[in-house]
Amino acid sequence: MKPTVPSVGAFSSPLHHPRVMIVLGRWLGVAVVVCFLTGLFSHFQQSAPGWVYLPSRPASLYRVTQGLHVLSGIVAVPLLLAKLWTVYPKLFAKPPWPPSRQAVAMVLERLSILVLVSALALELFLGFLNTLQWYPWPFPFRQTHYALAWIIVGALLVHLAVKLPLIVAHWRRTPPPVPETGGLSRRGLFRTVAGAGALVGIASVGQSVPALGPVAVLAPRTPGIGPQGLPVNRTAGDAGVGMVGADWRFTISGPERLTFTLDELRALPQSRSDLPIACVEGWSQGARWEGVRIRDLLALCGAPDASRVRVVSMENDGFYATSELPPQFAADPLTLLALRLNGTDLDLDHGFPARIIAPNRPGVLQTKWVDHLEVLS
Image (cartoon, rainbow, N blue to C red; front, side, top):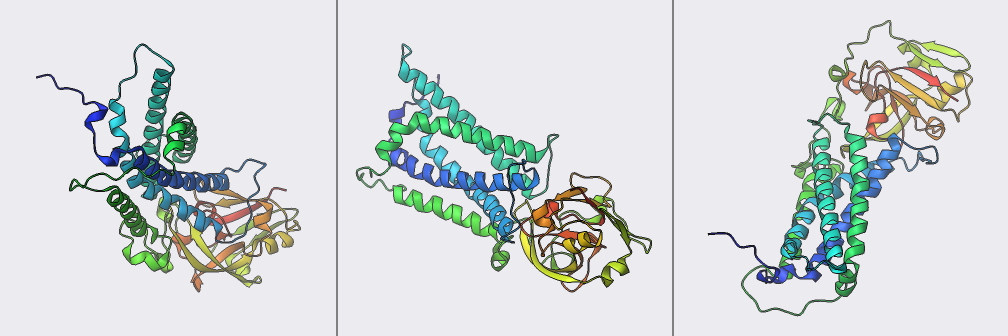
């Protein structure tokens, strides 16, 4: 017997009402906007165009924005699934025939939904695997993640334009009550979706909020776990860095070229910075760092505070074997060539003998195993 395609009228549940779709769409829209804006900030931290100024303060700003980025992406998953469930009966609506303006609008709407849902689902999936640091694909994650974000924004704008009359009609209007059928009510659906979003959020946000660490069962990182009580993303073994011997030298190249042994660095005036490591995967943790201020090193070699500095690691390979400190970061008194962490010398996995620590910077730019600074301007 040939299966029949159901009509839109076959779906009589009040949970498929436009008002329900719009409420869930608003929630999902908030999550997408927060995720997009915080992701844009993270992308600019690593690839800022010349016209973008990135401040070094507040010192923990990146910790907050990236925590929100990952949290909003995780919460968006149950919201997206609920939204799709409420609207899927509309997919059985047949375009009017012969073709008309209404038919064109319906085709455009479905194309925008196809692009939007596909790109959003892929974006959330890739983002989740990034939190696990698992990259089973041949393309670069960050650039692909960034491109997908703009595709989502474009498809979302087209979708909103097509559905604007329906959105306006039901933005505030509450549908009439329906007889109890024993199933889930509208309010019950909203509570269920909100509860699911809150549950996955609480079970993951502990990787950046230490107080919730014990219940962060969905988080790939747990605060306090790792060498010197701080998690590690990339170990010395991963970076190809072995034990550092007594012949290690640190060099700063500026108007003058200066070289220091580790003991000579320790003999310079030391400063302390209480700063978090905040990683793009969403986890963060505060720590106490001690070392030499970058601006003091710049003064020693005759360079001005407001210098742009290239940081070079002993790491042999990797996307972040070098990084750059813009002038505002190099001049900030919290930016250190760190030699100690939480009261003891750096562990090798944390960048021994020296690493960069700066306020409001992603962890990937807090370069480890530093042996060379180059003044660029």
